[in-house]
Amino acid sequence: MSTLTKPYHHGDLRTALLDAADALLDRGGDGAVSLRETARMAGVSPTAAYRHFADKDALLAALAVRGFQAFAAELGAAVAHGKAPLVDSGRAYVRFALARPGRFRLMFGPLLARAEAHPALLAASRQAFEALQANAGSRDEAWRRWAMVHGLAHLILDVASPQGQDVEAMIDRVIS
Amino acid sequence: MSTLTKPYHHGDLRTALLDAADALLDRGGDGAVSLRETARMAGVSPTAAYRHFADKDALLAALAVRGFQAFAAELGAAVAHGKAPLVDSGRAYVRFALARPGRFRLMFGPLLARAEAHPALLAASRQAFEALQANAGSRDEAWRRWAMVHGLAHLILDVASPQGQDVEAMIDRVIS
Image (cartoon, rainbow over all chains, first blue to last red; front, top):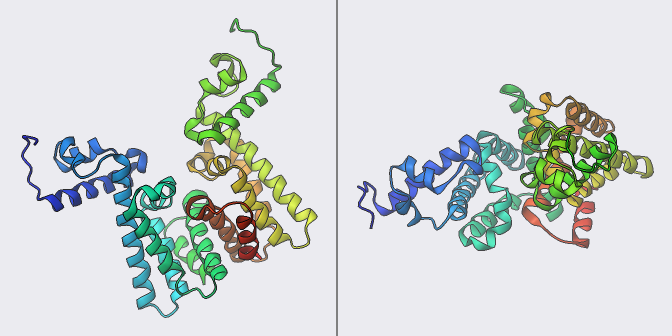
């Protein structure tokens, strides 16, 4: 046991570590996330952080799981409250990516290819992908729509970089 | 001047360095590319390599320029030889990405946001993007198609990872 003061309950510290890592992710992408810096930001020793996450990959996988859960919730809310499920979920998809690019890149980055090693990530990503394809009719049509919104998010993030109102207008015109 | 034997003419060495860096890119993405290792593979001193590329960013920009030139040529060939320009260029787009993922990720990665610092990259990428949008009708329709093929490439690379014939069949079904 560390002799440091630990002001956290077990579950609270895990959440606090994920919040700190999320902030690092926003600042500099997954390259900026380290267990040591995450522990420092949460005010605990690295040893305390390692009790929750075996290594950086485990920490990133847990961040991606939170990301996929938020993603599924935002897509679900868009579909539930809107009148045109496909258009509304498409807008929600692109907005989710633009709101926090680091999180989006982590969720759809190389980590996903190693998801077999992270059962919670595999489950969360599959659940989000299934929800995403639920309303689209045929499987090919589902892929077509998914590809379009995924590509639009990447093009705006990586190529076009328009700002403010123009992005919203562009998303609406392209998706609807 | 280095005292190493230099078997290259000026232009040949530049090409040899780019070929070596391209091989590194294929192996491990842009993180695997360094001027030192590129020079070693081309059989010259780092100093000789620095005469052609001021730093790693300049080397990566030159690689991306070659990528965009090959990209434009492959899309152009698909359009010239095919009967359905939009479908054929869409297939060529996704195949280009899948053939060499490291090159595709470099071309559409963070480097592009710094393209103002690399005039040749800015020019080559703009030329490719304009060619890409030439046959699509309206600007919104052009973005829609671009988003779809770009997203399909990313989804296959990052999410779905099917192999062999299935990919080709999937590309055809989704794009056509």
